Length: 437
Ligand SMILES: O=P(O)(O)OC[C@H]1O[C@](O)(CO)[C@@H](O)[C@@H]1O
Image (cartoon, rainbow, N blue to C red; front, side, top):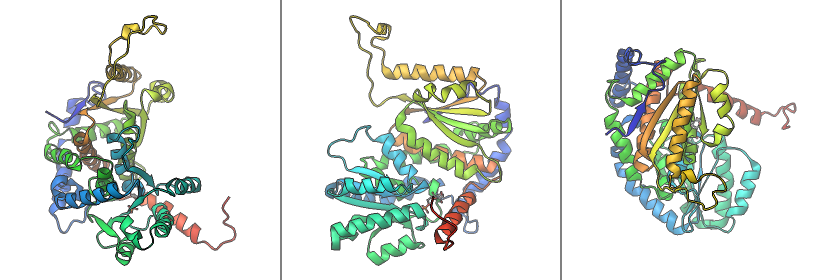
């Protein structure tokens, strides 16, 4: 059985089977190019993530689990420092597979280094003052400003708190050889986990970048990787008829060519909020270049049906929507019978909340489709580690295909460098004219 079911009944008038199949040759060529790059010594394309992630991490799993056991034994809090691809995947796993409310004996995982709020950092320092703390600082380049500044401040805190033993509390996840963080970890004897050279930031969730925080959150990373491994096998065919990741990529391309420039990834499960954020970085940084690409955004329903839903239904028509739905909830709950029926809801007695949520999803899809929004549905059986691993791989593969269909390089992000250059020159500036306002 397919782990992700792609439902296309609401896009047939925009992208029918013939239109999709007309891409077959282009898709086969791109597929060939992507897969050939894995084993090629000459082509420097960072496609390490395409390899079976379970096999690729085999030697690391035990080491990561061992570090995690130590963190869980000795600390109350794990601070994970990182931004972009060094943050969003781990946070997505944490939220999607964790509980909405922290359980008493859990290690609390706090993600920092993804913004520059001084209030946040001050309040965090107060909060962790009397707690046992470990730090996992994650940066492939080792030079990104936000995590670097946060690490500098937290490191000082850890050194004051633990003195001689401070190095025990810091785990660095960075490049094998390059970067300031790698140097610092050698100099200070920090434990070091490697981000493979041929895997870029936004494709790195299934490396130690996502895996160490995930185990500390109590996630079975063997299941996560097993899901991704199944995806690597099941999505390995260039044949569009049997590869839903490529079908999704092609449908996006057809819709963009028709003027649908914005894709909303919508969910009916708030736990997926950071999965949506991970997806936005993946597609936004991979496709948004040379003045092309689909702008990725997201909504959480039913909440957003009562705000932005009005625009989706009835505003300007340049959108399409991808609904990521889950067939089975982890736990369900039924509507109780009330003797006085004060709210007139007795007609729903014994209906489960998940059933009602699913009906809301179907009603939304129908309404949006009737409002001239092309609606795709991607359905998984349940939200567990296995299916989440599958989803990560599915979207990474779809994204690489989708970017190449646009004729852009999925693996660079020249636009972000512009901001980095500017901030660094402004910070270095001695000019009196530049003042913080
Ligand atoms: O892991 P690093 O090198 O700190 O980079 C973090 C993020 O910054 C970016 O370079 C730009 O946002 C992303 O591509 C990357 O995921």
